[in-house]
Length: 140
Image (cartoon, rainbow, N blue to C red; front, side, top):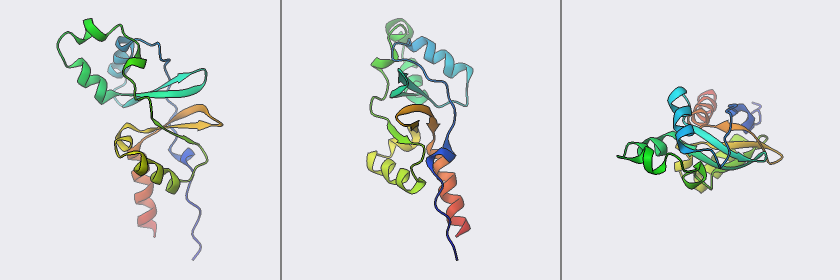
């Protein structure tokens, strides 16, 4: 029986508008408030991904008293994940899975950034990766 090659990471691509490192935390909080389905926002500078900000981490920060006053006007660069998993769109799902496991399972929940020749294309989620892996296993 012939096994097809695993799909590339591009199959997980979600086009999500990025922000710059100078974007204020209050503005990011507003984006998350308006888009309940969005769990992360990529931080991109001159087309290159430099970080990721997670809804969960920002909500945790903003749940503390006086956070808006103390941190709301600070740039996202002070709070972003500065070492996100960044992969090229043509990497295989198997290689992507190994990269995420090696990088730490927190990247499964935070997600990862997909690029084309180093330039930001979109994001991928651990949830979507898990679905593709599960479908492949069930097909076998």
